Image (tube, rainbow, N blue to C red; front, top):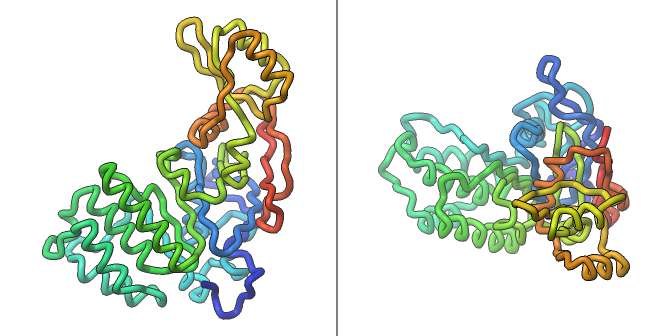
Length: 322
């Protein structure tokens, strides 16, 4: 679903040299990204790396210091046409204190041109949201469920979900994932989803973008990302010997044992050497990879693999050192 003035080739989201400073603090540093319509993107990184700031800029709640932020080719800043295409649900979404559920849903229906009342009623029932209770008396989980309801029922062509599941128990989180998959199947749109519970939600994502210190350090399709690194585990000295000269992203110690997350792909020679040293090589999970990129301490880099636009199936991995 796109704006009437766009073509199928117009990216849903475009960043060009985007920067954001708060005083002397550089929060975002020259981001360049294109995301095509209908893509579900996982936006990952440690707290404070700029994820919420980026989503705030793309939803007209923060102004960039420099560069461009475009939705379907249109600048978002003070642009009602672009804003009508966007829904941003924050981690701590605020609602008027005296509002009841019906008031919030009525306001949302008036604001979002693609609002789906039938879907809103369905999600309301699935999460058992109380209708006679003021929103200010909702629990943390109920507030998260309300945010999910608005984010999905808005049917906004570009939807940002910032930690949308906080306070939800595992059953409710699974319900959210099922609702998201089902709804995007019926109404494809671009969703940027920030979460720290990465492995639990990994099957939702087509593409992963990792921020660290305000820069993009990984931008790939999910399957390529998890193939871009691996783990080696065993006695610490043997792991050190085998990984000498390799691009180690993160190490974990437990007594005399060590596990190293290494950038690259496993070669036949490496597999043979690991077997001879009785070391275990295993695939890296998306959670492990994101964690490793957030803990990097060396000057190694992942190998570039194409550019950062959806026109090329290979996603670029930015240099890990600056």
